[in-house]
Amino acid sequence: MERNRAGAWDTASEGKRKPLGIYVHFPFCVRKCLYCDFLSFPAGERTRDAYVQALLSEIGAQAPLYAGYEVETVFFGGGTPSLLEGRQMDALLEKLAECFAFRSKDRGLSDGAEVTVEANPGTVTLEKLRSYRRSGVNRLSIGLQSAREEELKALGRIHTWQDFLDSYEGARKAGFSNINVDLMSALPGQTAAAWAETLKRVVSLEPEHLSAYSLIIEEGTPFYDKYGGGKADASELPLPGEEEDRLMYAWTKDFLMDRGYERYEISNYARPQYACRHNVAYWKRRDYVGFGLGAASLRENVRWKNTDDLSKYLKLAGEEGMETPLKEEILVLTKQAQMEEFMFLGLRLAEGCSGRNFEKIFGVPLEQVYASALGKLEREGLLRRDGRKDDVQFRLTDRGIDVSNYALAEFLF
Image (cartoon, rainbow, N blue to C red):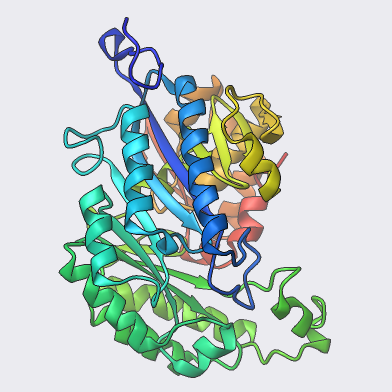
């Protein structure tokens, strides 16, 4: 065996490499939105530059742990990763290509691996988008949320509908042929008709992928305070009622499926062959490594996250090995915890959970472990089973998806 440039043992000749996803967290944003509880905050150029250097150090230090893996997806999330300058994105992707084996022949990035960057309208230029594309980024996820100006202002977004159009047009000109648009329904004051207007305007642009989520009021956000600290009767936010929220949700599915989008996950729709491979890997519990502040990882049924203390991260990012002070909340998953994740993550997907795969992984039939939960949900019309006799698939029904939190909770021991 020989070492690659990162010092990792090259095991390609010993057999097929295991698939790996890479998540890179960029926590900085222009301004925090009123509903956002993600690990994100504004920062100056000097801090962002120091952070990129720390990321490069962390990637180099951790790469030797992943000899024998082949990277299939890379996802830059945030925050607002599109604040990264072209030179910074190029340096990060160059470092990843140098340190990891990629599913690709062109510089380790462009052909086989899906490389996504989240972008906010107004933070990208045509020049920057072209630079990203040259560096190997081949999928863009644009956070629009709404096509209506009053709703964007209510959410605290930094952009307008026109900013989004300019960014979307720039992405197409830069050569992006795989674009997702993030949308949010059940906003304060929003009606079903207003939501339909947003969806129609976005679909007319023909993006390859749409993520459509309902607003969730998260603790620690300005929206949570306006919502009366979680008490609806004390709320200053005129949120749509549950019935109208359900109407929006059901109409979304019908509208998008009629226009060629498949719902492959509870809140995600794609044209054929354009499902987000990175997120599907999460739901199928494949190994992934997270780089950056607060980034989470899963490797051989061990979960952990990086520190969310920025000064600590900048100091320790170059330390070698998994058990460095950078890693926190290390959790070795029990067999029961693995079974729980298999079910409540897998059932988010339209394809559902495979009984054959469950038994192959855990050595016991799915129907035996979850007989009570399966029977209850089937009687309530929330779950169905189909497929071949030797490989039964378990899927949530449309009604089950409507109350997915309730249905998925049944699979917790």
